[in-house]
Length: 167
Image 1 (cartoon, one colour):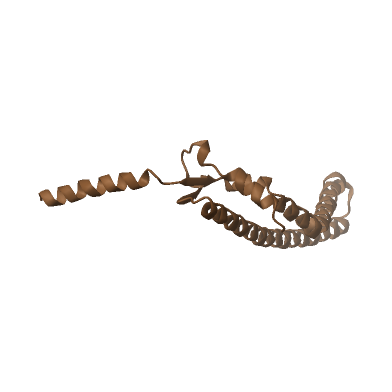
Image 2 (cartoon, rainbow, N blue to C red; image 1 turned 120 degrees about the horizontal axis):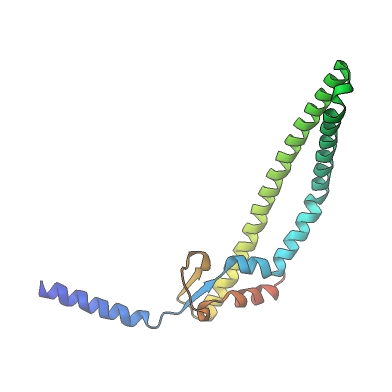
């Protein structure tokens, strides 16, 4: 029993000594994503790829709203045939709009996930290189860290390194 206690205390002492030299870094991924020039390029590609479709959907939405306003405003003086035709037209346009909007959202989400995945992999590569070059023992994301001293934050180093890299 005494041997087990002595072994346990010895391990605790050895463990404490080895942690004294531990070098830790923390990265704020959201801050890196906001500040990196690669993210600006991703935003521009999004605008080029999805801007026209977004404007077209916005136009369709306004057209549907105008049709609904017309029915609400002039519905009392319209004939039954006219109301029925406008109602059919409204339902068809609304159905098409919702379908187009859903496809648009799915395309945007898929593209966003793909682009962010590429960018995050690049950030991890850069952060890993910094950690190896500067001999860090542990590198964490700030999302999982409750408290840190500013000296452990290497976010700016990652942003600077990314800024010098080609896409």
